[in-house]
Structure formats: structure tokens, C-alpha cells
Image 1 (cartoon, one colour):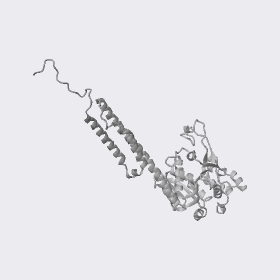
Image 2 (tube, helix red, strand yellow):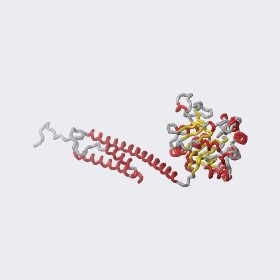
Image 3 (cartoon, rainbow, N blue to C red):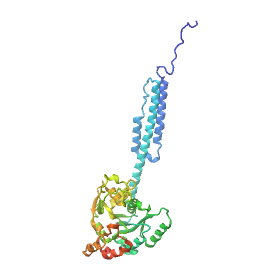
Image 4 (cartoon, rainbow, N blue to C red):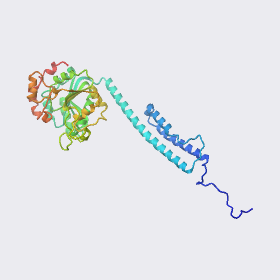
Length: 404
């Protein structure tokens, strides 16, 4: 029979119809989600071989995956609308992005763990190494390319030379070196001049450091790290090349604190934080120290100070994360804030030049170190070092007759 007038053909379900999505679509979505998950997990498992040893990090990744992956329950049949399908696709995309961020985070944690492990192994290796000579103290005299006359004035007065320098190391355990890095153009005229001077005197410690006035904090940090790696000493000293030192008095001073694990010895001060640009010792990060007009925390003045072995090791291990301020003495003091460190304020390390140090020497109490505060060292030290040594020195034989 033909169709009756006005009748309609049977209704067919369209995509926009309000009916359930066939079960095969649900199955397809489950399989697609599973495949995406497998690809992401494979990325987790395909890290370098060393990742297999970091079980804790892998455990975190697996736990994170289990928490955020199962968004679509494959065990139950459900009816979805077309909008629900798009929503589930969007959620799956979000899951993938979240996992990607989590993987990046795990990679960073793993890198940090590897770095810490390497540093611990390096430290343990240094402690076991028989190549690191034992010493009482290492004295690093911070110097510059232009300071040849200053170095010669020190060699001619209070620093032993040649065989006496070797004897000092062997008999007293005292290591003294001029500390310098290299120029911005390694191998140039400046570097060759230092090489020649070192060949003559054999009294330099060369650093992997580019010389520059504004790099003193970095130079100090590298010096302590390098000295701690080269010598196993009870103390490490930093001194400027325009300071007069009585080695016997320095040794006696340090010997009194030899049994203490973490000591920081110097003339302690807490000067003003200079916020004004263009002035000497300007601190660009002045805002970190509070309101304008505040003072620094207590720290040793930069002309000369000493730290014990544990503190030098601390600097060496943490050198990559220790912040450096504009002034190196402030930087060093900041590295010990928050640590269990004994600050020892010893004013014999900052006597004035004659007549101050002379009066004390005549009274039988020579100073350990002398300089002029107005010049942050001995004014015109190359010309005046001999005078200061003659009037304030402990006597050339004192270091050999002093027992530590």
C-alpha cells in the first residue's frame, strides 16, 4: 500500500538527539584514555639509568599517576551526552598537562638529589684522601695584578721565603700563599707576569676566578673552597696584602680556640648599610637590611679574619647557593647567620700602626695584625711595611720559638 496523505517516515536518531551514546563509544574512550596513560607512564619509566636508583622519586611519580589518572570508570556502562564526551576529552587533556608538569617537577628533584649525592661523595673522598696535607692554619693573602710592590714588601718583612717557607709548613703546619685568579684574557701579559713571579718564589695559590674589584665576595668564597680542598687545616685565614702580621701571635691566638668546632675570629663590627649610590662600600641590596639608616649584622672586618675547618667546609659544599653581597666581609658574615657559630671578637687583629702597635709591643703584648682604619689597610703599605715591622714586629725568630 502507498503512504497515506499526511503520514511521516519513521523518526531516525540524529547526533543531536537526546539518546544514549552506544557502548562502543564508551569502550573506545576507555581504550584511548588507557593508551594515553601508558604513553605518559612510559615517559616516566624511560629516564636515564640513574633514575632507577632513585626509588623514592619513582614512588612519588607512581602515586601521583594513580591519584589523577582514573577519571573514566571502565567497569560500568554509562550514558553520555555529546557534551559529556567533549568534557571528558578536555579532562583527559588536563590530566596529560598535569602529569607533564609533575614529571618536570620530579626531574628537578632528581637533579637536586644527584647534586647533593655528588657533593657528599666529593666531601667523603676529600676526607679519605691522603693527598691533602694536614696543617695548623692556611693563610691566604688576597692580592691583585697591580700589587707586586705590596707582595715584595711582605716577603721582605713578615713572610718567610724559600726554604724557610717550606720549613714553616713542615715544622709548624703553617701554609702561607698569595691568592690570585686570572685576567679576563687568560694567558695574557698579566697572567704571564704572575706565572714568572710564582716560578721565582713559589708562594701563590691560583684560583679559577676572573680578577676584579667588584668580584671580591666571589674570590673569597672560591679561596676558602680551594684551600679546604687542597689542605686539611684547623683554620683558614684571609688577609689583605696591605696588613702587617705577626705570625707567632696569630698562631697563639688560634691555638686557644683549636678545640672548638665552629669559630669565626676577627674584629667584629656592624657598620651602617650605605644606600647612597656612588659612595665607597655602597650596598645595592640595602633594602634587605630594613629601613634606611640601619646597620649590618655583626661580622668581622675584612682586613683579616679566620674561620675553623667546619666553616670552610660549609662554604665549599654550599658555594653554589650562598648569596654574595657587594662587600666581601658582609658576605662572609651573612653565610654564618643562622648557624651555630661562635663569633670571637679579638681586637689584637686590628691594632693601629705606630704608635699604637708599638706601645703594645713594648709592653710585651705584640699585636697579631696592624693596619690603618682610615685606609682599610696600611696607608702606602709598600713604602711603610718595613717601618711598621721594625717598630711593631714580634721579632723574626718568634715564629720558630712559639709552641702551638
